[in-house]
Image (cartoon, rainbow, N blue to C red; front, side, top):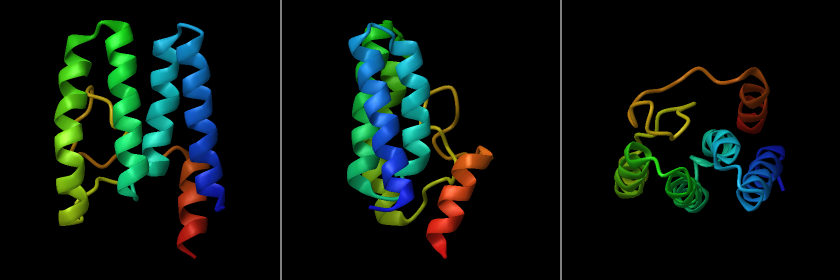
Length: 115
């Protein structure tokens, strides 16, 4: 398993633990990290958006719920078209089409995997 995949799994595990501890806001932060790491593959990408939808439901955040429903529709289209914005956190407070700066630790993981 690649270091990126290990980091993705760790972020998902942390998010699930935080959801179980009734802390969906902190879970969402971990899911944003998992999104950056998992968006290259459709399965992990969709999984993150489904978990973000659950976190939004737990937060009773209507804007985030609508945003995640939209992203669940857009994700397959983005994969088919090859238009996935690097670094995008996947949350509804940012455009689903906007590339974003990568945190340094994630930039290293993604750059090292490209070699």
